[in-house]
Length: 281
Image 1: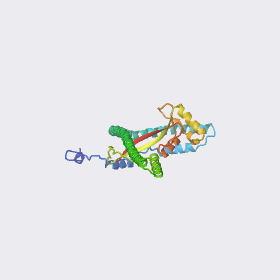
Image 2: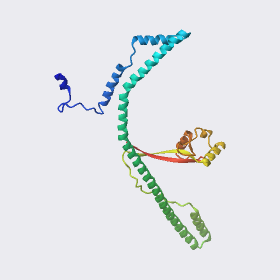
Image 3: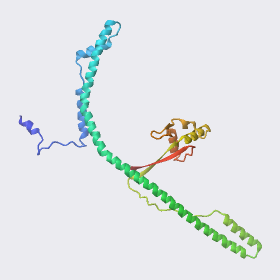
Image 4: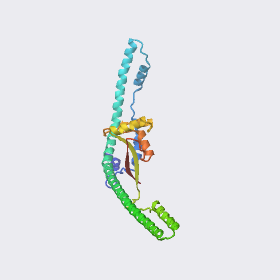
């Protein structure tokens, strides 16, 4: 064996050049450049035979037989061409399959982790927001009670002054002022609660709305509203049952309307579904 051939083989001292993600596009480009040289080729005589046959007009038994002979040959050429390209594609199909297997193995756990964490975080945020609304409502009730107590004390003080006044006209005036103060709207303070929901750099939350008609009663109410012109006629367009959800209906138009109204649509029979998600950068 020639010495120069042996020297070209990789050794521990001269390792083979590793393929990396950075070099992969270059390899693919080189492979693509080779493909035209592997094209299926027919010899000139077969090409002429096919061209003459395609140009032939079938007008009688002889020309029909000739065209049939050409057709049989063309079918053979076509099958040979298909086998030729299947042979070329087979290694690449295997390569693509290997890439997809790796993709599933590597991306799958990441997608599952993303879905799991997404659901847990959104679920906790919803619960925490509900708790915050409860705390806010309770503090607002307490603030309203404090405001009412202050107002009642002011009314009582003013009434005591009116009752202690000897002059009738002034007593009546003070009494009327006390009554007006008692009937005036409460001047309540606006309260706020601190949130325990953390702000995570790079993580943001999305919220989308869609509309559903759940059950026959909801569908009937929706259709009646269309007939009564409470809902545009377009509302009936594209209405279909959601796959996997018996008697639950939706339509692109309905979803567009729910989204454009930020979930505040209020159409008869329509249930607004709020879909939350996360984005990261």
